Picture 1: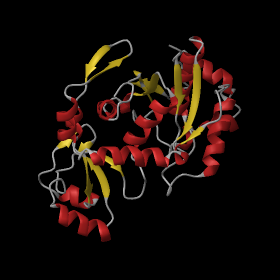
Picture 2: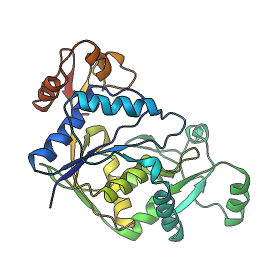
Picture 3: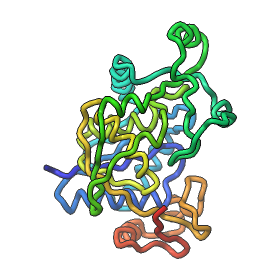
Picture 4: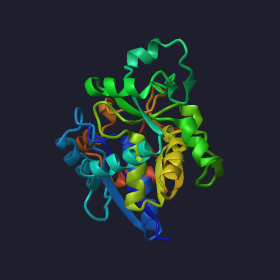
Length: 285
């Protein structure tokens, strides 16, 4: 099997050292194996995505000396695929409309906590169909996966972490996750899972902050009859404060490093070897 990796930036800000580290690892793994390296632009967040950041991201990758195969894939061109997958899950009774706001969920005394914080307490899970239909006609809503029902359909699931062996997936720990937001046609979980399968990604190389999400992605793969790639979750690039980098960290942006006269190809070689500029270090969550 030919190795195929990808890097999937969201055009909501400038790329930083953490993005560069992930992109270099994915690129170099594919090239060493004689495989393919693809770019996907995760641009379905209509309120935050900017075309200028798409151009800037591609310029940053080229500055690092990274080359990719084919044209970048755009999530915004795949909305029909997300809708079809949601319809399929809806036909099996595995998703339901949710009308709760974040404030509603935060105010719920019964909301348990999972890997990503407060879990949805299931307020809208068992609403009568007549109530759902009436509220859907006039209220904004997202679509949530009934995770317990979904797990009952798939049974126990596993996935493999490169170098660490097989792991048992625990999607129940995430509660009823959102698959389509009120303001976006698909969540990260649904879009990324479908995209990786459609692109033929064989090895998902991404930050360790996303390792818990793999439980959810494995469940969606089973429900939608999608292949399961091999996963590798790498350490995160952190700053002097010990926190992982975010797009607001202007000093770590690749644009600022380029403006400071840093050699992009030399930086990529250092990142591949695990060497970071002064003041930055790798850390597992």
